[in-house]
Length: 577
View (cartoon, rainbow, N blue to C red):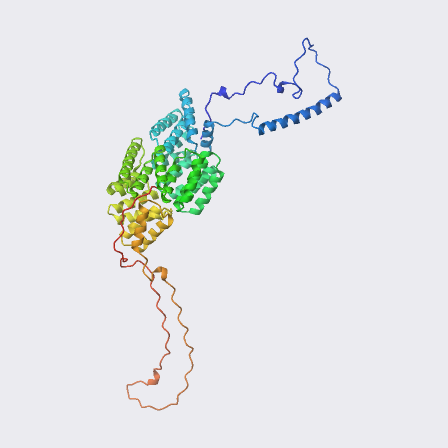
């Protein structure tokens, strides 16, 4: 993305040299001497060899002294070193590198470009930069009204210069806008248009990765991530690769890559983003103390990284530091009012028996979703999660079927649809979607919990036990409402019946047969046999063999229900992914 500052060319001209600058003199090392009053204009005679050598020696000493003084001045910070970049320059540098800019720097960039395009309304690159900055501001501040500004500005850029005429960055901005509005098909179309016409434009690959991920196309997302890494090495590529590994359930690879990104990050916003990712990974693997430490580090690095406030609140709930968690959630909602945070806080209130406060948050959630819809943002997924557990499950099913029809088939949508169908009384159909979410490989305790409850409802007790055990093992405190229900459901299922797959042993080998010995000959005696009968000696007794033990039948699904007083409540609470 071309984000060089569009300033008046005259402001970038170097200052005129001073007439008495040492560089304009014949002898740069000689001290400047004002000519004597009334001096003649006749040039002096050439210096002798001795004078020349003395001047050379004096010049070398003077140069050494000046160099030493300059080094001391630089070390003391008093020299005329390079100017520290301002907020606009920092935001431009971050955007050029594909990294996030801090909110304060982003604000400065927006103000700078607004002033410039007012005076230069046909500057297509500046309009593209301003429109993309509006998208980022709306996403980072949860102020959806900026999306309309972004769309208008990006269209102005394309009117000034079409995308085919080297204005692909406006198309990239429209793809980013579509992703932010959760219109992943539109984002895919814009992004693939840029990739087809300008395949080496690295800035298109992050928006393509987001679009493919939203559509549930793991293969395309993997290819786009690899291509991005080829074109743009560094922290942004490492961050994207870590997210790819995370979505496929490769925890160790995701953690190693995320740590490398955090170690190599230099700018505060970039560093905070990397630390936040480490916090999310720690939370997902059930290490809330580590998660809190990483989120705190992210906030110390960049106080405007408000998503870390919500992550910190989630981890504090797991540590039973409830008062701190409530405060962190409220602060996050004040600075970044996203509906998923209102859902999480409402469920926390509900788990504490504070139903009135929970209803207040659920009302706020509905208002946020309605406001986002007016700005063209589709928040059907979070609204459906709320309806499935706290509202009307049939409404949740309708919303999520609409998402599926739009080809929004990520693991998050598949899990939510499966759970909503179960809550609406259609567990058999819901099982298909819940399995699809789990089969992506993502390690999400909420997905495993939903799958286990549906399997138990369908009396598939062995798989249900394994799924619930996975949920509890992955993250024992994945939700203040659902985690206790997972424990209860697992306890009601009880231990697997004896002789199941866990107790099976291979059958013992048969004992070796006894060695056969030749029988001693008996004296022949004549016996009278009646006609029609056989000689008893003709049917000699065969040696008896030890019986081979029959192989135990492989374990499988038991035909009877486990002995339990009653099934645990299938209803649970969702946790936003």
